[in-house]
Length: 100
Image (cartoon, rainbow, N blue to C red; front, side, top):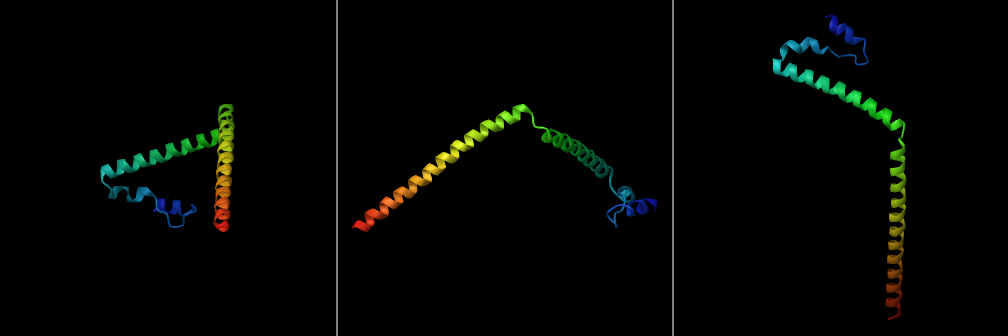
């Protein structure tokens, strides 16, 4: 009963400790749950490390982002030129149709 009382103090009001139902599981299911718990812990550690890495950009990442920014600017300029060309062609086509 103490496991239930301990979990009542957490943010989840009706949470029941996993140890209460652990005896109802087969050994394989228990091992699987332990592996999932270990995986969850490892993912939390990885998430923390990635958050630290993301908060301090490295010079290499910044250099790569600058190159990407220049390439995106070129693509955007080419896209604008293509759209402008389409509008001009459409305008010429409309003017030719109106003259007939």
